[in-house]
Length: 80
Image 1 (cartoon, rainbow, N blue to C red):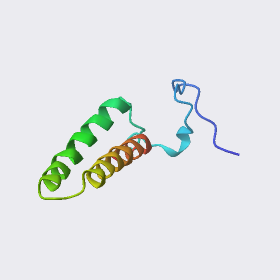
Image 2 (image 1 turned 180 degrees about the vertical axis):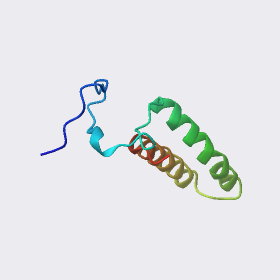
Image 3 (image 1 turned 90 degrees about the vertical axis):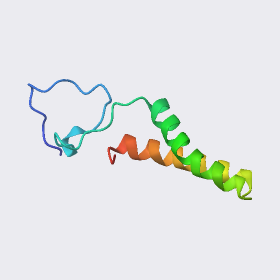
Image 4 (image 1 turned 120 degrees about the horizontal axis):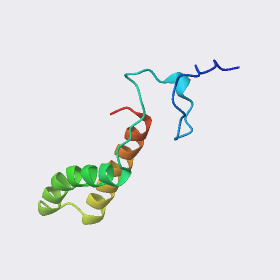
């Protein structure tokens, strides 16, 4: 059985199990689209440079998409 949450705490709109979060380790409330765009732009700059040097564009696109997905996962888990 999990610990009971004190009654003075606000309800949990994300339906997360908050007994594992401290005040310094909370899930992100940032917009997922914003996080994906920023990560895509951040990964797109060096990959576009690499395409200019001869890298396959599909490899560059897959690196950019992977970086955006990884940033979303890390953001949702509260690792960033």
